Figure 1: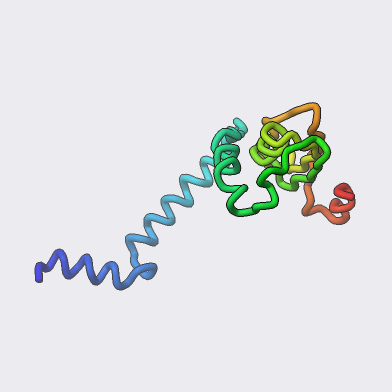
Figure 2 (figure 1 turned 90 degrees about the horizontal axis):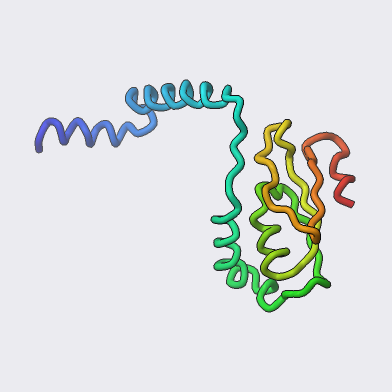
Length: 134
């Protein structure tokens, strides 16, 4: 067996105890700490989420299949950016209320809005904040 191959196999066997892996994670942490200091706010698109819900919700939760109609309602907790809301309101015609962490508190921000959807910023980790859901 080639000495380089043997060294790679040994490195693989050491796994997380590897100095190379430790260096890689340290560098990653340094880069992430710099990235977290940025001032712009990133809000993902709802497009990929809506596509996922259209494809998978009827299979994963058959209760959604054939459940179109404005007489159905929902609450979406942790809603941002709004993909589930867009699916339920836009595709199925439901009405609902969405709650999510505000951008000021580190949340993504809600990008989907509709007359049949109410929205509230909510930090549900704060004591007693769950009462807002009632």
